[in-house]
Picture 1 (tube, one colour):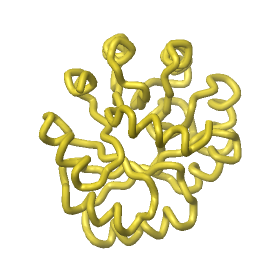
Picture 2 (cartoon, rainbow, N blue to C red; picture 1 turned 120 degrees about the vertical axis):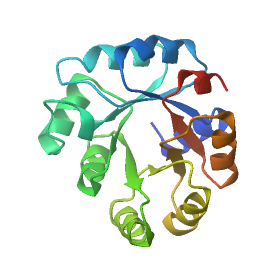
Picture 3 (cartoon, one colour; picture 1 turned 60 degrees about the horizontal axis):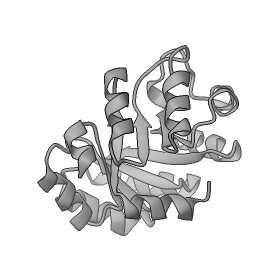
Amino acid sequence: MDPKQLIDEIIANPIIAAVRDSKHLDLALASPARIVFLLSGSINTIGEPCRRLLAAGRRCFLHVDLIDGLRPDQQGLRFLAEQHQPTGVITTKPACVKWAQNLGLMAVQRIFLLDSTALQDGARHIQACRPDLVEVLPGVADKAIQMAVRDFGCPLIAGGLISTREDVCAALAAGALGVSASKPELWQL
């Protein structure tokens, strides 16, 4: 998939369904969300939700740092790419971004904006690994989102602690391209 195409999809529907458990997968599939972040599972269980999402025409991103039994290294990512063919991965590890992209997967670099040092480190990591998208957390920190948009120079998604329509609107107004949310009611926006 072309990064520009993914960005266009996010612009058309900026709500990304962040699914933490299997009971929410059906809700994500029934929602208008075109992109789904799978934030849990194991190497034994991740295949089925990934297949269902892809079969339904959704974009499936696996958070490789959170998959039980998977080591997020070159071989672990190769296993995911060959066995499950997700659209892409989410990771906090800059090296994983490059490995994923070398395997033809999209890569979302997740960055926790705790303080100004995290912002500087995040900008340095993004410069080095060039992810397709950046997800910043917490997504309710409007000022931090504005600074990240300014400093990162990469399409940005806000995630974490998004719980209301107002949170979604504030993150988008601060410059986020999209918002990842784990509350199914927000997937309907």
